[in-house]
Amino acid sequence: MTAPAEVIMQLSRSKNLMKRAKRLMPAGVNSPVRAFQAVGGDPVFIAQAEGPILTDVDGNSYVDYVSSWGPLILGHCHPDVVRAVEEAARKGLTYGAPHEGELHLADIITKAMPWIEMLRFVNSGTEAAMSAIRLARAATGRTKIVKFEGNYHGHVDYLLAKAGSGVATFGLPDSAGVPPGMTRDSMVAPFNHLDSVEGLFKEEGERIATVIVEPVAGNMGVVPPAEGFLTGLRELTRRYGALLIFDEVMTGFRVSRGGAAQLYDVQPDLVCLGKIIGGGLPVGAYGGRRELMELVAPLGPVYQAGTLSGNPVAMAAGLATLGKLTAELYALLEIRGKALEEGILEALRSCGVAGQVNRVGSMLSLFLCDKPVNDSQTAFSTDRALYARLFHALLDRGIYLPPSALESWFISAAHSESHIEHTLQALTPALEEALSQ
Ligand SMILES: *Cc1c(COP(=O)(O)O)cnc(C)c1O
Image (tube, rainbow, N blue to C red; front, side, top):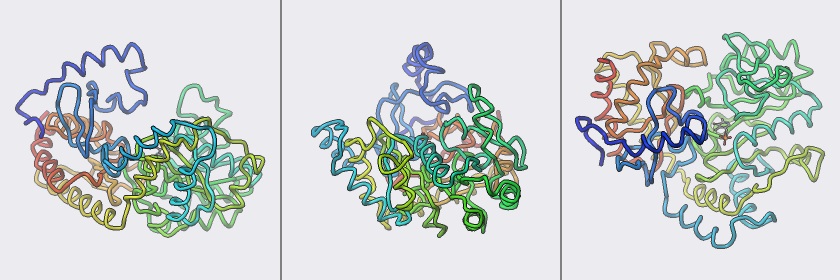
């Protein structure tokens, strides 16, 4: 299935393609982390994928723990999803008019997450977060927003802000090209530190429109919510008349069918979705209580539109995917996740490496540090250089981890017991190699 580590992997086609790609696209990629800058070296070009396996243009195959950054909960090319996409494509790629696929997908989502009474489909998680915030500001007539350090909500200008330290602070832009004025109303608090959110509300409570949070942080590695954090956010926002937005683009249908809101039993006012609900095609959505969603155009004054929103092929991929997400499937993902977690901890022990595995179901990450990771400060203490060496040692052994120490790994239903076992067999020698470099 995979090349043994002693055999030097042939990567000449990938290298040639990358040379050409770098002249045509920034760093040769269309989304930054794909460029391997956090781990060094050049990315491999993928030729095809099936189940949990990626195959590159030189014919090497890898057990894939990126899963396209979250959407592929069924693995690559699930036959039912592919069939649904083919059938939908034959009936038209886009109509720019209502069709039943939108209705069916909206129906499934609102049943799985009853706190979403109404929703609007968009084309990405970025759009979902941007639109949800616009709506929250309109609904409250306020402008300030609170986000958390290390939480990612897409690349909207005013969400590209994080605090430089562990203290709550006013947002400074995290990207060039974002004028300071854009993030003036963004306040950033440390994730899992309720007291600092409380402090912000005490000072600015009447001006805060919304708190947006990844209920399980997954964009600084996986950091589950601390006991009482989400319920605390729910109480604070309610007390001050602000809206609570759960950005479940990653966690929706991932940590449970009802997402993190169901898992932790906290109901937000608005939810952002993406990734899994598109089954591998570009789909996002935002939704919530009816009276809020009725503010969206053309019913209400909050303008938001999309040429390809509700695209029939994308809706079909989402429908086919969500249709497979049974309680048995989540139980299976939990078993696989647990096996991987335990195996990683075992390998760390046997190699004498300090590390933490944070996991919620099939979302998992390894932090190479000696303290428990419960916020961005502890997450950023991971040994990134060691992770980079481990990443390459595993890639050479046919295991494809996220090319950054601060990203979640995703297990899919296509990862069998033997794929996990194969991964764990490669892990100890890979760790030893990484430590010896
Ligand atoms: C991936 C992600 C986004 C952005 O989604 P895109 O489709 O990449 O725009 C937003 N929020 C969270 C929590 C995400 O994980």
